[in-house]
Length: 478
Image (tube, rainbow, N blue to C red; front, side, top):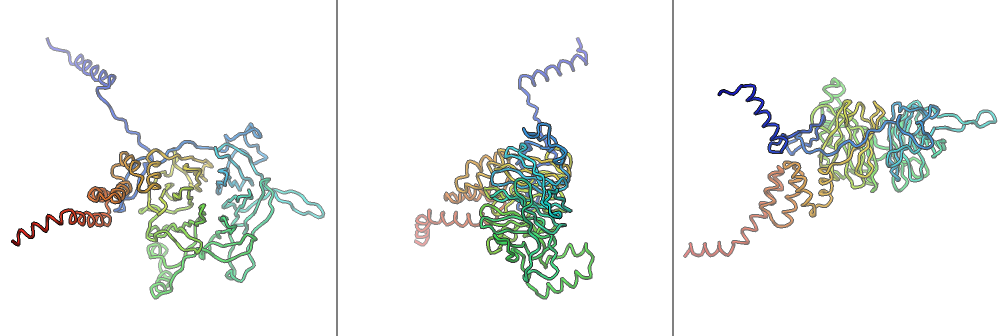
């Protein structure tokens, strides 16, 4: 009796479904991200790695409410939209201050990113014999900073000043261009970023200034410039000036940089190190610097930041309490995190309208391990939380020799993650297990570490078998 072909297909399909239901046959599902996480290996190749951060919240000002504003932010306080928000800042209490300059306000959110209050910016004006209160209208809004006393510093480059407001939104002072012989003649004072260190020294970044950040003491007196890159005037430099004066912009862009450039942004960590981002698309070295009190860069000057290929422009930077450095790229929308020494850990994000992507990535801050990103194009705030993979990388990096179990977990997620292999190699080298260390260094593609471990391994072998070797030599001679 011949079986009908359709009947046979039905039987086979039924068996297949039955196997799926009882678990006898597993069908793997791959969750693919629109923008996968990647890292650059020792060959300067971008390779995918395990997911480092995931989006936990996307916040729009339109939906923010509290007891004072149960229906949302009213129109007289700027309404429910951010218009070209220029910057935000996390203060010592982990409150988030958003500079919504076109609405003449600062929106403040609690550490849990719920609405705390809206600060309308005003100033007192003397009109005749009367003092009246007027809204502050700025031609341009740039950076925002909040000091330990709660004073709010707003940079306005086109208005040529840094404005200082109290928590009620009233302007109490301005930092204008200083009257100082130190300043170059016709200096163009256009503040875009301001921060204050633990000693009360204020650093102000002026747009177009290539001599570093301006420094003011606790009394507001101008002290000079800080962090400018020195350039030795050599024959090659002078020759470079000549060629740049006659070459096209495109050709100049491919030449080696030989003149000081301005900073794009900076931040100050809790140890008072100043982290700067150089303006421009050059990423060969020194794009990010970590400056000490003397203005010297303590990072390896050969460290590269940003993407190695294509167009890139780092636009903001933050350093969290553990010293991890995170920068954002305006051109690609990428978020890139590095360890305390500038070693890339991973990069993620992108440009677009999907979750975890941005139209115009503007500013980045951190609250604990979480990263908070402001999109100027949409006015949305995205909150990223580290995955287990990223937490293991961070903790293992901090623990050094005690990080073996964590590095093992990292390698379980990505067996080819070079930093984890190098970390394991260092741990085994410290334990005197040089052969195992060599295996990890080989997987981590580090010839220098491998050679050092091999030298120690060979020395151990000679010590262990020295007596036997001498006996063999004596017997041979005899």
